[in-house]
Length: 249
Image 1 (cartoon, helix red, strand yellow):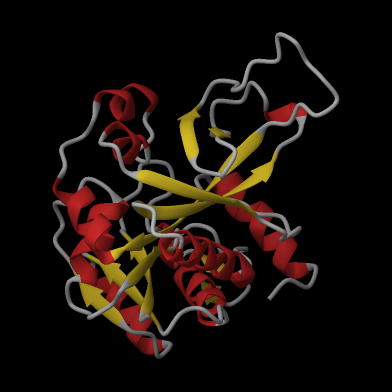
Image 2: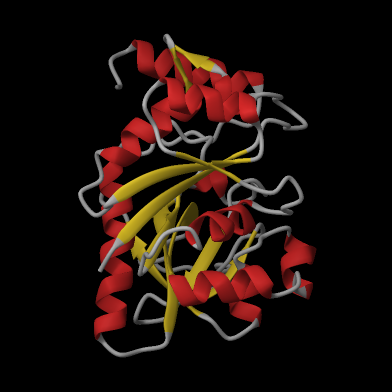
């Protein structure tokens, strides 16, 4: 199977404009993410998809591969789908461009989970990563929670606490969704053509589009222990810089 990783990157961001170009100890964030993705053993190729020539120029400057995309995409998934049609790939990984601390082993876990599900012959269309979250995240709407069935298939994603521990036991655990996806090429193409779904719009979670349309999502609990920070604000950026300054590379 040919597997490509796509990093969607847009210049305009409400809270942190020019986010992909933000400097992190001498390298732009898009380069940090790109270099992390290149260390994933499961990827045959890494590509940045952007609608902005300033980002494209920076990617070319550090030797990365970049594809120009439409400026009208409503989501990163749509941008990834446009890039994917330019390559003959069986699986496509959507790598968030604002997570420079991403462990490349997490990409491998996500890809292997999808491959394993496909080998079982089930109609799984994509896979994603989860990790256990502490009580400090239970009622934080920015921490997206997920509940799964006995085979690890996602049942629902929510910004609310799920499952609700009305009868809490020692085995009670809450899992946070990490925004990393691996798709079959067919599933990605289908998702990009589907309109936004009701629950997706209500929760503000595009992965619900798949569930609402009957597409199975395989989850895998990551074994990676490193801190993962999504850079959405100036404060997040400073936090990431401090972590890199302590020796992350």
